[in-house]
Length: 235
Image (tube, rainbow, N blue to C red; front, side, top):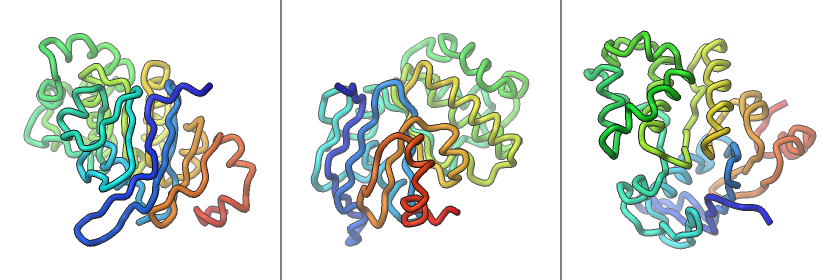
């Protein structure tokens, strides 16, 4: 039987009067990279925000490690071991790389415990450790955004659009880092670039107009041109 670290069951989420998610279900097996796919506005980011408690669902359930986290505050969900890497990166540009990492800690010594892994995945950050976040390139800011989620001992990382707006060479570096990361962490990511998603993920979920419409192994989706065309519009 599949061991799921995260199970989202038929969640409905409103933003104001708008019914954004109208029955989304997601299963994320422990130790996997699972990607959420779908056109712009389908509800992918809202699904991540619902899991994190930032836009709480009005119905449905979310289980993390077998425990319901529905209705919990975002800080309490984070403390359970879920890291959030938002689409806009949200680093503190006036703080140094070191300070950005330090404020992400939940326990004393978190940075020291995990800095070797961070520098192994993102060697640039070691060189830029004393530089302010605002002086980093877009790719380096994305590396720092992911690195912050590695400071506490998170088991699940929610990563929103990691490749957006980045040069191909930086995307390759990020893909390699996320792949390496999956040896120790479970990853649920939103990724618009199908080539990146297909090379990175073990499993997929397709979201369309607020519904989860298909899920399975990425190796099977790559062969299913009809499904890709219908929901992703990728040739």
